[in-house]
Length: 145
Image (cartoon, rainbow, N blue to C red):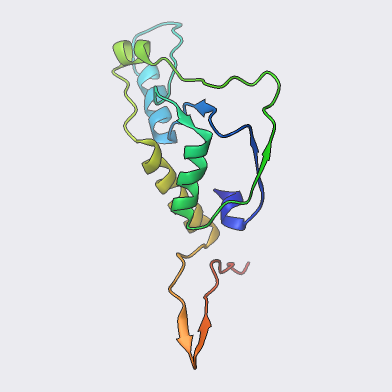
């Protein structure tokens, strides 16, 4: 989100088909609290969304919610990188009642909104025509220290 917002190059390894179980922080915190708040001793729980999202979809959704195209440099796959990882949350579901509730796109939308509020990024405005010239307002107004 930061790199796309600032127009800084992203390095994409492979064709974007690799998939990870990206999970919104509120869901992870919920799982941690549930694990502390139960009478289970010495249990290990996998927390996550329980389904994968491709790198390509990740980047597409960031671009959509940031409102800017990413600058992407595609590189070869990294040696040893696995094409798909995903948390098996069955034990957490059964023993903790854990279930991820924030879908991936909503998590991206919320994170972009947070990023914009922290970094003073304003939503792009429509271009304004002045004396037959089109003026495009700045995407970012930096806060003064």
